[in-house]
Length: 181
Image (tube, rainbow, N blue to C red; front, side):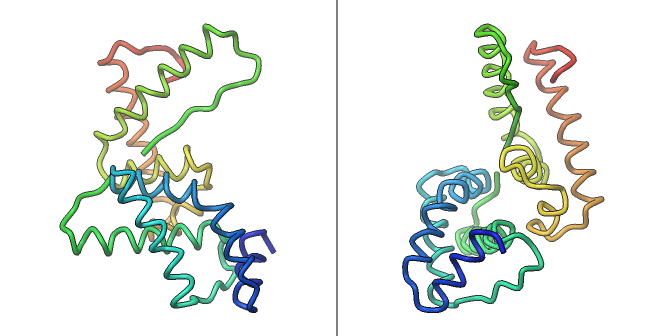
């Protein structure tokens, strides 16, 4: 059982500290994921709060079929899309890993590239942005991303392939080239 599942189980069994631990461990990542959908940090914070309120009020059953994080992010995604449908708002994601042995100059270039990818990812189609965000920025597997997005793994892989191809074109138009883009 992962920590999130353990904390949620503790909460359901009457230990309020379990909920405190859930919020502590998952709040920041969930806010950033929701920000990738709604493109407004204050809205993302509200949606995160609504997600945890849903856990408190509805006490949905965690079955363990997916990781707790995947399950929680799916609830958050559903809350976000539900709110956006009500408000008629549209949707919005990103990545890159930095090896430990980089020089300061290489790190700066990587940071610049990362900033460009973040900015340009906003121009991707909504489903591509979401797949890129979950897979690369949140570090989820394609399987977990597929579960959250309610798509099959092949569809997510195709979204990621097309998103990378489009991001590469956009980066090259910006003058950012190289094998590692």
